Length: 499
Image 1 (cartoon, rainbow, N blue to C red):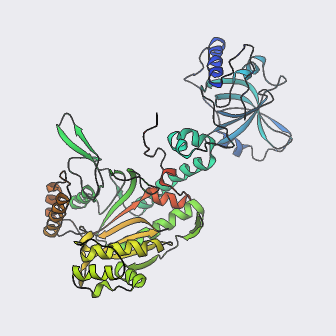
Image 2 (cartoon, rainbow, N blue to C red):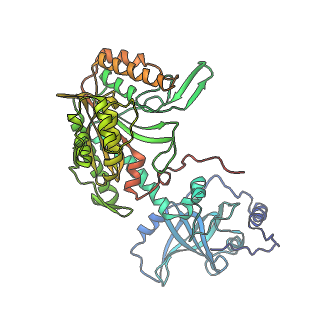
C-alpha cells in the first residue's frame, strides 16, 4: 500500500513533510480541508445491502453520497477503496465520469485521508460494488502515514499504546471491540430482562470497602478530604436493598485496584455486580449459567466455542464441587476431618506444601486449592463452600460453621465470578468487619476505616439476598479468544513511555 505523491509541485521525500505540503496546497486550492458539515446518504454497509442483488457490469441511475478513510489507491488514484466503520466501497474516478476539478484532487489524496464522494452506483465486470465519482471532497487530511495495512502493528506494546492504529489496520482488533460492546450490552439486557434494576454508585469514596485490595488515593480540594477510587460497589448496592428501591439491583461498574498488572489483571477493570433479595448463592449459580449461555449464543451462535487450543462449553449445568471435596480429590487431604489450625498446617506440610506459621485452617485449605485444583479447572465449574476465614460477608453453611455459602465460577483456570448468600445479621456483620479492620491495620493498611454508614444501614435491616460479581474483562477474553486482558481493554494501563 503506497501513497500517490504525484503533484504539480515538487515535494519533499519525507512522507510526513509531503503530507504537510499537500495540506498547504489544499488550503490554497479548496479552502477548508476540515469542513464541519458533510452528510452521507448511506454507510458502506447500507450501500452493500441495498445493492447486494445488483448484477455484474450493470450501472444504475442512483446517485449516492458516502464517506470514509482511504485505505488503498491504484492507477494514480483512479481506483480508491474507502472504509467507514461498517465496511468498504470502491471509488472510480475517470475522465469520462468525473469532472476535472474532482480529478485534480486525486494527486493530493494520501492513504489515511478521509474523503466524501458523491456518484453513481455500479457493479464492475469483476463484481466489485463501485461508485463512479462525480465529486470528491476532502474531509480530513491525515498528517501521518498509516501503518502498512497487510502487516498492521507488529509491536505488541505499540498496539496498546496506539490503539487507534491497531484498530485501523487490524480487522481482528476491530471485531474484538465490537464483540466486547455486544457482550456488555448483552449482559445489561440479560439482567434487565431478568427483572434487575440498574443503578450507579460512587466511584469516588471517602471510605473504601467491599473487597480486600489496595486502593488508589486522591484528595478533594473543596471538601479538604482524602478520597479513594472504589475497589468494589458492594457496600452501596446493598444499601439499595435496605431502602426497598428494588429487590433485584445491578451495576456494570469500573473498579480500581492499585495492584499488579498481568495478562489477567489491569488496575482499572469492569465488573457486573448484582444483589437479589430473597435469593441465595444457588440461585446465583443458575443465573451465571443462564447468562453465560446467552452470551455464548449471541457471540458464537453456539454454547460451544474455541479458546486458544481448548474447546469450551457454556452449556449448563456447570460442574459443581465444594472446595474441601475438590482438595480431597486432588491431594487426599480431608480438611473436614481436621479440627485445628495446627493440624491443618501440619497436614499441608506433610503433603509437601509450604505454609506460613500463623495460617488458619481456612487459609491452608484455600492455598492448597489454588495450588492443586485451580490449574485443572478448564470447563466452567462452580467451586462452593469456601472457608469463613477468607469470606467475611457470606452466611455459614448449616452444620459446618467453618464454611460459608459462597462459590466462585472458574473457566480456563481463571476465576470469572464470585457469589455469596449474603450476610445480613448486622451484629455478625459488624463483628466480622471489625476483625477484618484489625487484620488490615496489622498488615500496615492504616487508611482502612470502618464504614459506619454501611453498618448503620445494615442495622435498619437488609433482606436475605444472594450477591454476585462477574469479571467482565476476563469473560470477554474467553468469548473473543483473547489471551491477554490488554487485548480486550481499549486503552489498558501501560508503563511510562521510554525516552
